[in-house]
Image 1 (cartoon, helix red, strand yellow):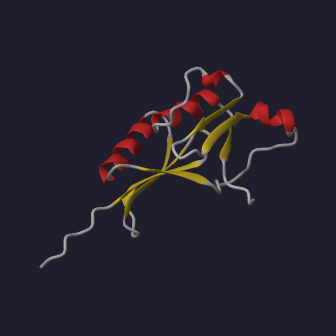
Image 2: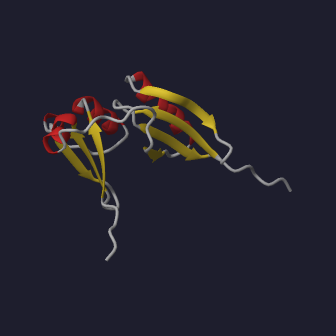
Length: 136
């Protein structure tokens, strides 16, 4: 049997801020989870998403250091429509999230925006743009 992707793990320096950010994006994270060093949730479809506090990582990997520079991975959240991309970008940046690239109509046919979570991970918001009607 080949391995299958089961869990996406992220490291956080501030569990409360990070969980608040992802709760705002609709991820169902149990109340009180911010007081633990490891949090994981099962997403629709069965994939798990987890966060570990830096101290938890250091408990089994004392030499771990956070990456420097831009993130190399990101999470992308599909929104209901282009207006929702704008709404969620505004809501999250008004709540303190770092807005990296405000919403724009991308050449590939989506309304797109890029934010950073509290630890600097890229979080994309997108929705398909309406297709133009065919003139007859």
